[in-house]
Length: 146
Image 1: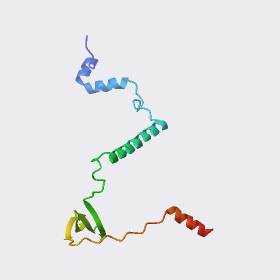
Image 2: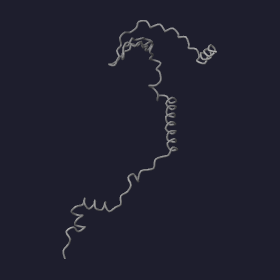
Image 3: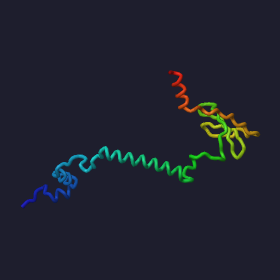
């Protein structure tokens, strides 16, 4: 009694990849994406949007209320820009007040340099006249047109 040349146990031992491919071919094909979850509806998208906006607003509120968290966002009382002048596309001259002393500082793309220490502080700029209220301007303009 002769054994066939391609019997199943011998074939799978010699050619394991071909045996695996033959077994896979016997299994019926499944649809692509059958395991993917269904897309959320418009309600789920709105709930997600509301949650994200709530998180952003909550973190902004927390940043304002917690001392020390917004260190870089709050103005510093010890350092103040007195005056500023643009002298180029990326170059500026600043008069900075630090601890009662005023410094002329040059700011450019390459860095910041102290140019001069002012012996006398610059006089404060004249107080700008407050802008009139928009509602008053609109009412005045509408009365003239009638």
